Length: 276
Length: 334
Image (cartoon, rainbow over the protein chains, first blue to last red):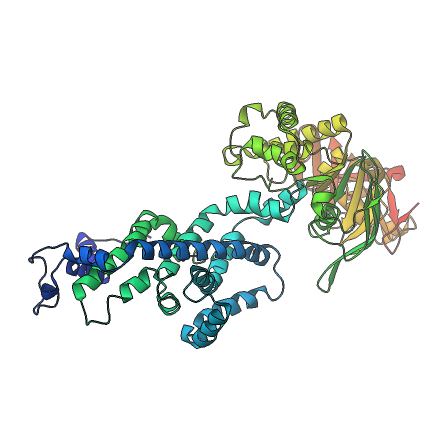
C-alpha cells in the first residue's frame, strides 16, 4: 500500500489531529485554569485566559468546607470494590461462555448487554425502596453492589472476548494433568488472561469512578464519593465556578493520573473484540 | 496397569452420530494406534477415553473400573496434544511439575522426577525457559515429560508429530517407541499417517466414519486386510485394486495386488501397460503404469533401480500367492 504522503498532507493531518485533541481536552483545561482564578475572574466577561491573579484559595476553601479525604476514600473503595467483585463473578461466567458454550450463549451475552440500554432512572424507585428496606441506604456496600451490577455485562463481555483467544487445548491439558475446575481457572486460565483481566479492571475502575447517577442519588454523607463531592459545590448558595472547578480537579486527578500510566492497557480494553 | 475397555460406546454431536456402537479392548502395555482418514472419528474416540468428551451411551472402563462418568482429572491418564498445549506462562520446569503440583506431590519428589524426566528427554538445559523460547521438537518433549511424571495408567497421543518437520518426525517417532519399551505403559496413539501406524504399533485400529474396520498387528493388516478399505489404506504405495473380468477370473469382485507384489518385465508378462511417471528413490523405484485396461493407473514397486522411460511398454505379472480377493460387499475372500 504505497500511498504517497506528501509533507503538506502530513502537516495538515497533524494540525487537524491536534485541533481535535485540544477541542476534546478544552473543558478539562478550562476547568483547570478556572480552579486557580478568583470567583470574580471565573465569571468575568470576556473570559480571562492566562493573565489573571493565580490563586490557590479555591483549593484551600474546598478542603476547609468539605471532607475530601473521606470522599476520595469512598471513591477508591467503591470503584475498586465493585470492580473486584465483578471480576470474581465474571471470570467463571466468561469461562463457561467461552469454553463450554451452549446453544443460547450468544443470546445470553446479547441480553446481558441489552440491560445497559435500560435508562437507569427506570429502576431508581424500586432500588431505593429495596435499599431502604434492607437498611443499606448511604452505605459503601450498596454502591459496590449496584455499580458491580451495572458494569457486570461489560466485564463479562470483555473477559469473554479475551478468554476466547486462549486455546481450549491448554485448558484440556490442565484437566488431563489432574486440575479440577478451580485449579484450572486459578493456575492456568487467569495467568494466561492476565493482560486482558488487567485492562478489564482498569476500564471498570474508571467507569465506576465516574458513575454519577447512582453514587449521587444513593448517598448522603457516609458513603458519598467524589462525584457527590463535586455535586455538593454546585448548590445551594448559588454557583461558585472557581470552587466547583477546584473540586472537580481534585476529583478527577487520581483517575486521570491512573489513566495516563495505563494508557496501553486501556486502549486494548476499549477496542476489545475489535481486533482478534 | 493400563487396561482400557470400551463397551458399546457411542458419540453423537447433536443429531449426528460420529461413533456408532463400538467395542474395543486395549491390553496392558500395548502400543495401540488409531489410524484412519481425517474425520474418521479417531480423535473423538481418544477424547472419549480421555474424558474430554462425554459418551452418548455405552461404558468405558479403565483397569476394570467404570470410568464412563469420571472427569479427565480422575482417570489417571496423560495426554500429549498436537499443539503441545504447554502452559505458556510457566517455565519448562513448572510445566513438567504441574501434574505433580495438582496431585500434591512433595517438593523433593517433584524435583527428583523433573530432573529424571529432563535428563531422559534432553531438556536439562532448558528447564528455566518458557515454552515460547523452545523449538517444536523441544516443546513436544516437554509435553511428553509432563505426561511421564504423572505416571499414568496410559499415555494418549493425539497426532503428536503432525506439527514437526519430516526429519524431526522420524526422530521423535523413535523416541516415543523407545519410551514405550522402557516404561512398558499402555500407549494410545492417534495418527492419519499409516507409516507411523505401521512402524510404531503393536496393534492398529483402522477407523472409517466412526466404525472400526479392522483391529490387528501391522503385519496382519498388511497380509490379510479384512476389507477393501483397509487394503487400500494400509501399505505405501497403495494396493492396486482391480475390478471387472480380470477379478472374475479369480472368482472375486475385486482383486488387490500390492505394488511390491508385481513382477516387472520389458518383454513378457500377464498384463501390458505403458510407463507414466517413474519415481527413483535409489533403493526403490515406483513406476506408475497406464493403459493396462484394468484400472486407471497401476503402481509398481521395484527394489533397486530400473531403466524405465516415460512411454515405454512394460509387462506386469502378479504374484498369485500374494493376491487379495474381495467379494461384492468389499469383504475379504479367504
